[in-house]
Length: 587
Ligand SMILES: [Ca+2]
Ligand SMILES: [Ca+2]
Image: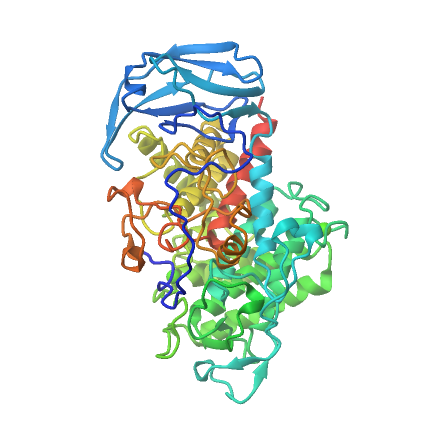
């Protein structure tokens, strides 16, 4: 089991009932008779995509023998078919049948209706050539809402405007940093890591790395003026502006010896308050091999992404990446452990081979220096498993598969890296046929949604490598799961879909909802998702089910199933944006 972090220990009792069992996002236009046991992508489907709904048997739906897709405007049937054979799925304890309406490719707004005695209907959905565009934009804009030391103005944040918090211009050095504890450091900016207000280098590295990888593959997707952020209009792609906000902070975490401090947090998690209300002393804490190498990898990627826009900035990224690498080479086995007085996320990781490989690959691609090729000689850079903050090995394979390293590495080794990605994708596609909701595995651990998103990202690479559209269609089906075709019958992307996650473990959101229960939710955050560990049960979270695929509660106290995190949103951005970019061009 991979825990994202140690659970929040210091929580305030908030007198706010969020236990509504059935939540319709206000104003989303859910049909009043929508039956939540008809599970589909509540946003919708692409023309040309596979379109499958899962109908879970209840007393109404089980009598249905057929389905119709109705045009929303005039309820005219446009396609009909028979229900698929019943299938049981032990992960959710459900018996369900599929309704496959892939044949419908006319853009429009629809509902799926069954021919049971109740004429059960689905939530509305659309079919179009840009179906995920809003979800992709919202999930990218979610990073703006995570900005630390930064005021969110009405112009860009709307009703989610808030004052700046955590200036971090005079952070204290914790004794674990190795620095004079009487000294102060200026380390402003960066993204809040998750539902808390901490900033962690390891998780920042994988998050910004995933966003930069998206940019490298789809440089035109989030151009200037696409995200409505303060830097829109500065002639630089908005995705690079947002990523730079975090990279600038990361740079402040590099010590004079090249090493990189581990995190900047309070000693314990704060309560459910707004950033500016959190006055706890903030510390620069620890230093590890992982923080140096994740920093090195992300900075190396930034060096190539920003070069055409700001050569001096890019050169500085590369120089810093090399210094962090050199520090790690001299300090190859420095694990991080929370000191006794520190209770914020530990991001425990004692295996550094994957970080060394990822950093070396990114440095090699950016610098072409022989020493990195030499380091990688004989190493198996295969795509093995979906990446996580703890295991970044497969990020090396993804970057190498699409990089220009022709004269540096033998073509055969790049071919084998590419083959490993396709092999992983093929294995998952075989799995998708076995699961009721057509997902690539049934591994419902902490942050399961981000694992699915990361598998979708690998599917995108498999498509780019092979040009076989079955991988792209599979990636879209993983997005279907995240946006409503799942055992909870809810879109796991906040505010996106007729019945979407609305009460995430996210301090800013909880504080705003406490002040105004009608405020709704910041759209675009991917919540952690079903987690059979249910580790927050001891903290007043009541689960309605013990089944793995149903181990999810849309309540703010559920940090084990309903937190948000930058490393979960980054692959969501990649998956939604890539499917949107590629399906559009598919003919
Ligand atoms: Ca811009
Ligand atoms: Ca590791």
